[in-house]
Amino acid sequence: MNNRWRVCARIVCMTAAGFGCSAASFAQVQLKVIISGGFNAAYREALPEFEKTTGIVVTTTMGFSQGPGDTIAKQLARGVPADVVILSKEGLADIDRSKIAAGTETDLAQTPTGVSTRAGAPKPDISTVEAFKQMLHNARIVAIPPSTVGIYLSTKLYPQLGMAEEMVGKTTTDNSALHNGKADVAIRAVSELLNVQNSDFVGTIPKEIQFISVFSAAVITDSQQPEAAKQLIAFLTSDKAAAAIKKNGMEPMKAR
Image 1 (cartoon, rainbow, N blue to C red):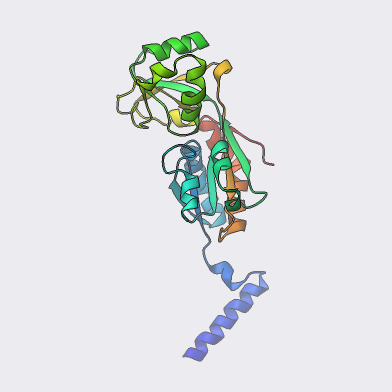
Image 2 (cartoon, rainbow, N blue to C red):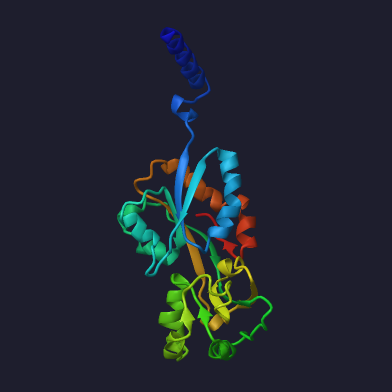
């Protein structure tokens, strides 16, 4: 019986070789991705097509791009395994360079910063910088993300507007605050605002104070599947992913 199985195994391997394959190609390739919130909705929408057309199975977990939370950089530093990371360009720059495979950093999409209110609430005027400031003055609680956009708001924009002290007492980084009705408005990347339940999108903040978020991907140096990882990134910069990216409030970046 054992001899029969050996013969069968040889036939399978010879057949695979005849088609330019190897026995290893029969094993299902698996990828591990860590992603932040800004690109997540578009990624989740596009991913099934990638898995269907390639046969590659992707496991996805979350992490913040930047800030005091469990960032992707912190996860990699403590040894969390990953093949691909997707996060803000600033967050990618925070990752230890030895963790990133050379030449794999790729910009995927960009999105502006915008404002949303609770569903059904009057939409404030944010058409000018002064109008935006008035909205901040009038708001009881303003929800901002604890990551890249929130860092821009709290460390640069609020001081620039002369509102740093005032906003300390009325700002929350609770991601569910607008959804739960605890915040009057939320300011964050448009790609995130469009997917907040129980909210109405108001628009983008004035161009004079605008922050454009760029989401980037890279292959991790110790990836067990570097070629499949590169294939996923190429897919996310292709026309096949463009519709999902645009639907979720972003503009695709041209593949490099």
